[in-house]
Amino acid sequence: MDERAGSTIQYGGKGAPERPLGRSIKRGLLCRCPNCGDGRLFRAFLKPVDHCAVCGEDYTPQRADDLPAYLVIVVVGHVLMTGYLLTDMIWRVSPFVHMAIWIPLAVLTAIATVQPIKGGVIGLQWAYRMHGFSKEPEHGDPSA
Ligand SMILES: [Zn+2]
Image (cartoon, rainbow, N blue to C red; front, side):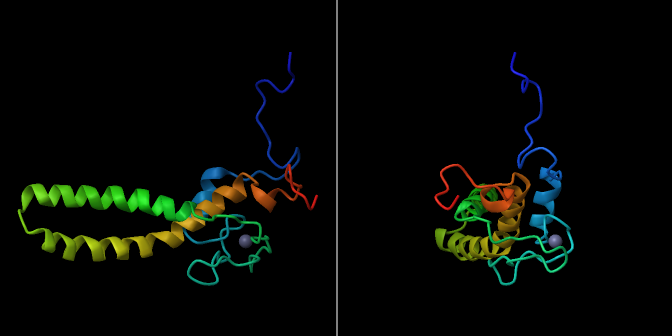
């Protein structure tokens, strides 16, 4: 029988410090360092810091790429479409009034949510030791 059956997978190798997924994502959503929870995660709107100013954790390996934008589209799209459909059922107004309400609201909501969502994605990657967060070479990494 496989001795690994039933055991928990420990990313980053045995003895690596635990990185709770929920806590890491929550700290990222708050734009805080997923490791210590105190340091800032962003140096500009969508530019993460290279290293945490408090604990020194390296954030250069993060590869959030397009995932935050996709998640913003999913979240904002569902919330605003629900709002649009509900108001359209209650108040019959012209399509131009809807556009005047929902387009600016969509832009503002997307701008307000993309940074916390990117922080959450970085927290997820950090917790799962994805990319360079594991300190071990990845499979197929030509620099390894
Ligand atoms: Zn930190």
